[in-house]
Length: 342
Image 1 (cartoon, helix red, strand yellow):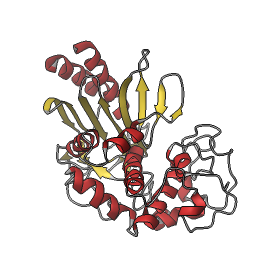
Image 2 (tube, helix red, strand yellow; image 1 turned 180 degrees about the vertical axis):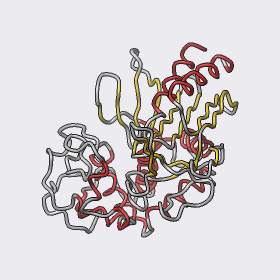
Image 3 (tube, rainbow, N blue to C red; image 1 turned 30 degrees about the vertical axis):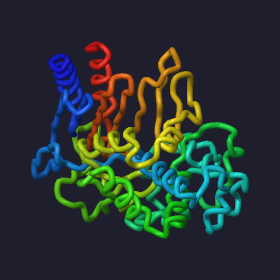
Image 4 (tube, rainbow, N blue to C red; image 1 turned 180 degrees about the horizontal axis):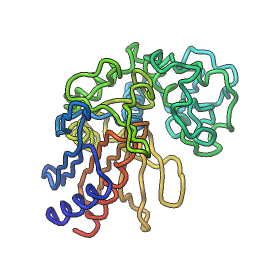
């Protein structure tokens, strides 16, 4: 399996000029590990297993875990109404919105980046400079006063603003800054020693810059394309080994009790025939209705990320890429290799 997988990975790297790091583990055994490209192109600093990468929406899972922890502590409930657990004005929001709706992208609230309306994330910062977005409350003017898109529970519609609201709920229930809460109750507990929510204009050592490649061969970094600091809908930085530790901690009930772990991993919403959504996590079912994989992903300008856990094989895959595209192709190659090698 190891030789075949490495061959498939090498092929996809050559074809797509992958820049980033990737890891495949079966239980505790490393089956393949890849580091390609530069974390800093100008200085030609190479990516390594120690490199920290932005993972965009991949960290919605952290927000869902935080909410589940607070529910387990009875500080919240999944059926708590938004207006009951957050003392902020949302004048046009439906009063029936619950935490469950927000977790499953079925709340119907307006999104600050609506993929049905916008296709360029950078459009957001024309009137709202990204360098001013450093806390969760800084996002509120982007959606707080807008009208509902549909009634709560009516359908699934992927929504970033819903996870901003969840982060604000975490802050109020825990009386802690959201990123501090995640650091203490998730990263530290999982042994994710190199991960964190870093400011784009004050990145720590071993952090990859994100690159946006233009068709003519030129490029730019993503420092002017993303909020200055990420939050509960995206923007954390991790290493591939830290993400592997997150999967271990989650699946071994080290972050939540078994009952609440299963609640998080239960399919609560459906996107299509085989793709479902739990709390902050995607899952793909096989034709026999068994879970083929649990997975998270994230895409921002200069960032692409995929990671999955395959319960039937006890295999974990992490692909971090500091380009706008690249993670999907390598993830598909790895998944194909897993299929054809077992």
